[in-house]
Length: 259
Image (cartoon, rainbow, N blue to C red; front, side, top):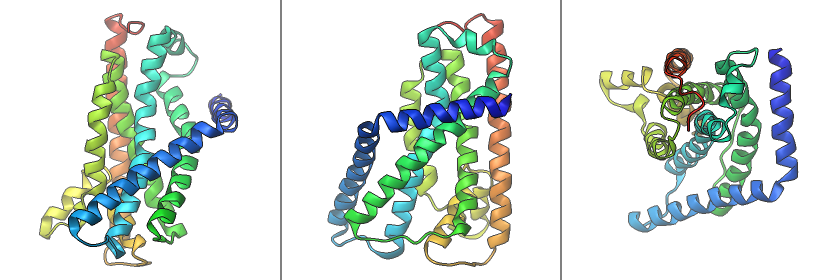
């Protein structure tokens, strides 16, 4: 049943991607143009171009940020849309748990988000004339970062299912996620760097920064990867549990169908 539901959601995403290519391209161009504007503004304020590892960090952080916003917001916006259309209660009556349904939708939406992010990344590299070389080693921290995004998405969905309208909360969350992505928690001095163990995306972004610099191996690599796995599990479990509590509270108060 789970596989059937996932393939159905996946076919829907692929169909939308094929039917509305102009929307997809427009969004990718918008992401690239916004980054280029930030790039020019940063270069002007610094008095010189942003080069080397700093630029790689910014590009990776920005593209991962756009990917994560999709994964985080899909659950919240999905619940808000279902509530607005009056179909949220019907989804809750499905044979599968609503938590599972929204998790499958989030995974299926990643097809669109990944394609969008890759196209935007190519455009960003073209306009900045800066090439980033990726390897298979970077796949693991990216997957773990997406897992953290789904966990945070559950937390956003918890707010949405109780209060229904969370668009402004999602707007504020964009800047919070940008702060988490751009802050090098794993490079903090002394024991402060272990704050990254609990902070969402801390270990994953630390590994990605080292790999983006062409370092196939770096001190503590295995430890940080293990911490990244623990970090992803922590936020997925936390989000899943909190959403379950929020859903039960909304159902007991009879506000599932409210908007």
